[in-house]
Length: 110
Image 1 (cartoon, rainbow, N blue to C red):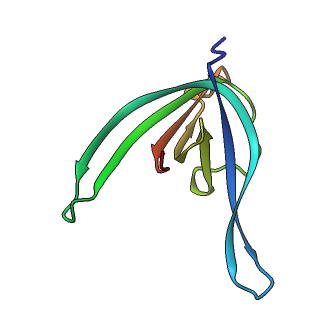
Image 2 (image 1 turned 135 degrees about the horizontal axis):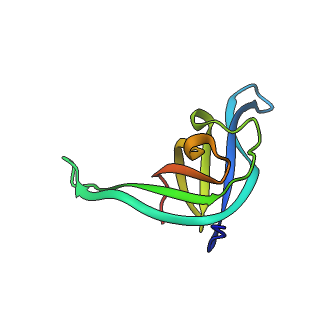
């Protein structure tokens, strides 16, 4: 068993309209899962305009759980320790239903 040391909230994006008809992005937590978050690769450099940009990729590994059918890489993000990550790939290695690997890109502020 993988178990883990942190909880990840998997959120799904939807578009809703406010009272004057504007489209607003809405994030809803649809699944929470316990596992491990590990850095895969990253860089922290200055852009042309001297803005420092952090780019990093992570992998979240957990025991296998069947995820909500609405969760897709295209419409999901993960919140771990109040930090936001875009979901890049959701993988069940070799489809053995033993573990989940969720590949992430860091997008949130600290």
